[in-house]
Length: 184
Image 1 (tube, rainbow, N blue to C red):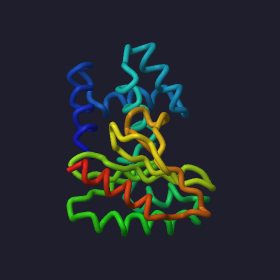
Image 2: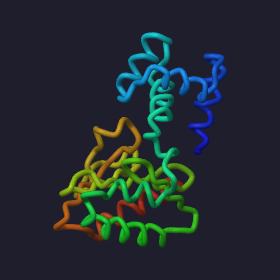
Image 3: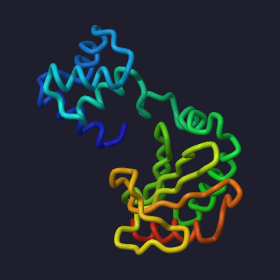
């Protein structure tokens, strides 16, 4: 469990007087099967903010990264039906590791967060035909393969779309290295 999630759980207890486990029990009694149903119930019936409702919904449905049994399970889930993109992911991981020994790879349900002191990249098998790389380079003008990101709600500032035909290039690694340097 990461620090942000622990803080959310502590604040949930402080704000509502009930622990995460108690909220999960309350939601389970309602027999909801969909994430959206749980969100609506917690927000309308209990005055939850979206963030707290989302946390309880994911924990109830065991749909969050923390509920997976390990990194390998998360990676397998990400690449199911997209196995042809796995060699690109492995090559990127190998190359990124050469930047320094202070890198953390944190698999989530849909992507892998790449961190130094802070997140500097996201590796995302987006579709069967496209691999996205989210990069944090605030203030950098988009050029070449680097585009401004408008989809990740501020988790990264830029992205690179990699099609299977292109797979890999020195430009991709150069942008990742620049983001790594900026995260130190």
